[in-house]
Length: 210
Image 1 (cartoon, one colour):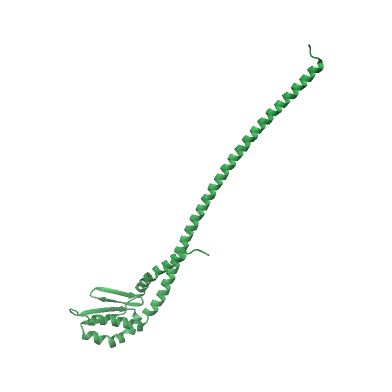
Image 2: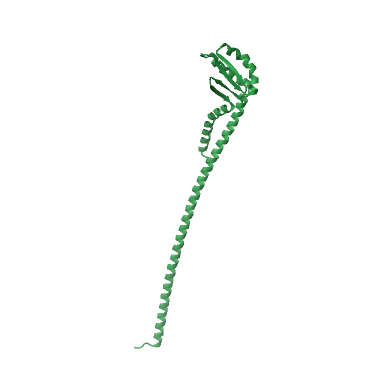
């Protein structure tokens, strides 16, 4: 039975609506796939950016820690050097005052000379004592009054010179030269002080901050 015009038109309309719906569904599906792909790409890119940022932050943190450790070490070294210089300055001031005092040197020289006067010596020994020029003038009369007679009675003779360029004294006996000068005294005392100073600094450095 032949279709009527009305039914044919209705069929065309129905097919057109279905085709439009199918096209719309396909377009929506394609759009969703593209959107999901774009989102996935954005998420992957964001993850890479975040990973790179975290790596850079870790590198920066490690570099900062290294820089801080180096800065702390350098500061500690500079502090030790400054304190060592300060200690040497204090020691030098005290040693120079003592070694530049004739009353301080007299008993030292007396004890040195008397050790050889009392010793059992083979042959006569000459003790050469050298002091600063200004100190020689202060010691000559004392040496003549207190040491000359004692050395002349034994096997020891004394030669007091004044050519030393710094505070203190040096004495020579049979080729052996012993120096008790400002430089030697400060060096010797610094060796005693500095280990204790380093220990104090190390102990302070390891104490937790409040």
